[in-house]
Image (cartoon, rainbow, N blue to C red; front, top):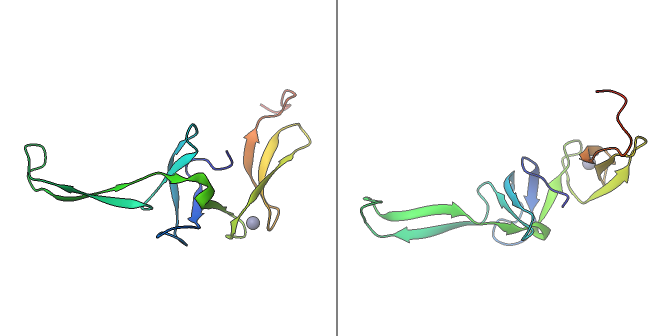
Amino acid sequence: MHIRSEDTVEVITGDDRGTRARVLRIDKRSGKLLVEGVNRVYKHVRRSEKNRQGGRLSKEMPVQISNVLLVCKSCSAATRTGARLLGDGSKERFCKKCGAGLGQISPGKKRATKK
Ligand SMILES: [Zn+2]
């Protein structure tokens, strides 16, 4: 999984194509993520005890991870990411367009020298 919550992603398919928004939640098991304001559905609600007004409730539905691209913080392009090993044995994500590092994805194997 190359996307984490709080990342900014761009939607590349569907009605929300081109939308950039923040990732709210990730479901690793199903490979889906919840993106702020994306894939919104409206649920029509009848007046009831719980909801006296009735009307429409909007709710975001999860999108497939393959339908979004990570937005690079340094070149701000929607980009594919790669993973690379660093000198200390840790792995980081990087932007395939500009090569900027986008945060560590796994810690180093050896003990870190700095605490
Ligand atoms: Zn970049």
